[in-house]
Length: 464
Image 1 (cartoon, rainbow, N blue to C red):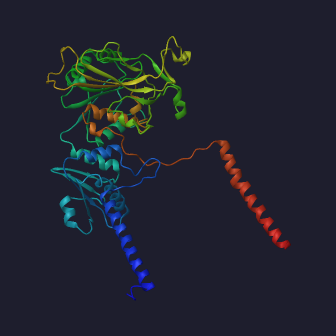
Image 2: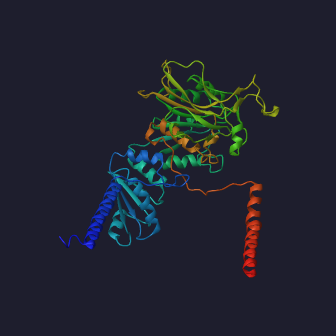
Image 3: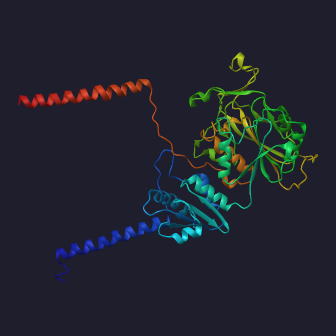
């Protein structure tokens, strides 16, 4: 008892039990953190947070995916991929990862037929995909492709001056082609007069900015396809393709003979003919554009209005998809006369630029295709085709709006989302006056102040 009552023994016992408590807390914290993975992304653009699309794809995995990454030990590329794939694995136990050093495992390299360092092989059942670039976009696209059953073919109408898929200039659609292929779609060009029909394999038909008139036979083929559970995306530039305007009117869509003018576009560095869309309808295509109070704008260079017709056929469900700001208007005059709004002639905003239609027409009609119809027809119409060109595809939400429309038409709503972000330079913009103030403060005022203070201190010490 005398030994236990000693002061040193009491302090030692307290330290021992406090140490056990601290160790217990650390074990508990590590146990909880292992079970509940959490990371904090402090970057402005959330570059290290998985995109909405990636999260949807991971949560939608039905089969186990084995990821085999061939990296050399202690290479920065391996650490980068390890950090990325850890975010994927934390959200699904269906993703299994194995790292292989090609220099130490030649047998496995021969088995997988690996030619380059940094190759990543994804296998699920009898399906396999390979990627080299360790980016979220490439990895997510590989998961989409390996998890998709059957091909999805997107047919682009050609022969009337439409946007060209192989055009890599600013007004081309090569970005659209590459992004669709990256998400596992097969992209084909379609000339109706040559094919004689819209192929049954087409998951969606795209008409992007036709400049020349379509023949009556082509209009009949398109209309027949739309009647027979067709899925089509119409991108209609101002004053182009009046014959398509008549076709769409039969589906409850009215194309305006106008040009949308928007004062808000000046704030984003554009001119008045590039309306900015910040108002989105309650629809799967645009549900991610207005999330948690943060709106993702989209830009439409030289657009026309697209509205719901006064009389909509029975059996059709039409919905406004996107609208411009209240400071815009639909201009119906001649640009040579000025673009100021005329209340008697023009329509004040917000102006609808996109409409979706689903359902069936009330009369059967003579369809151009004869395969059986078991599903609703789906149509998406925008009053501009330039928003998805190479020049504007990466503007804010433009690319996501186009790809979401394709995913909805192809009935792959699990792919509708805001895609992964690309790293960009962070810039700080100042005015000319602010630049001069910074210059004078840093080059003249602060050095002069240091000299004055130093001289004063030196003088006072010297007088002592």
